[in-house]
Length: 267
Image (cartoon, rainbow, N blue to C red; front, side, top):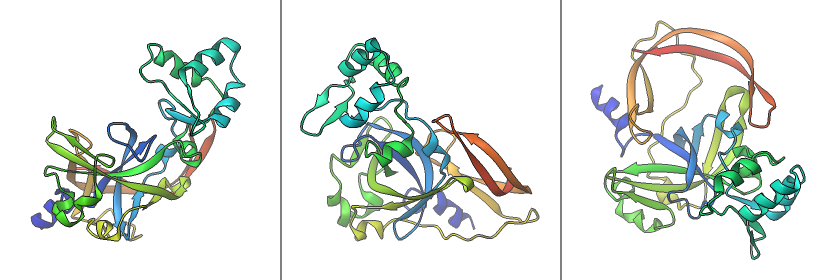
């Protein structure tokens, strides 16, 4: 039993991974946010929660100029000028990119946040301003110790973190569907060779409701020390509840979370 449990937290055999969001998925290194834990469930499908998609990004790094101009209509003339200067136009791509090295960058971010632009992560995905990535980390600079696929990774989709003794590899994702009422989001790995996807550990899913008399219940989650680690705990199902409740999202609207929820605690 202990061997199977250790496999669930080992970096080479655990199905637990992270989803991060990058404003430029072709160059995510050191520029990602909105981290959330997820599971690879096989065939390049990744399962996670959905509520983080409704959160606002802390800032908008890049935005199509057409959307930018529409957002500015809700600002006064002084704020428009500040934000316009802080988001210079890139003529070739017709996008506005935040000047992160400007001395007043925090003022620009706060002012643009007052505009009508919907800065939720789900919206940034829809307008191709930010995209999700699967992130996995290893102590050795090798993707699951498989030298045959290391050539797929380079400076654009991998990151060395010597301060932690880790190497991070990124795989592009697309959001297949978000089931907000159940707090479930399904992603698919894209633009990735099948031989890379085939290496990923996976976990089998079922829709069985676990009884509160069940024994040997465990909870797999991120480490309490950092998001890159994994924590496996014994757990106890204490009851079940059929719930319905309204939750606020970043656009000042609400969505309803419904369904059967099992209450549990770590032992």
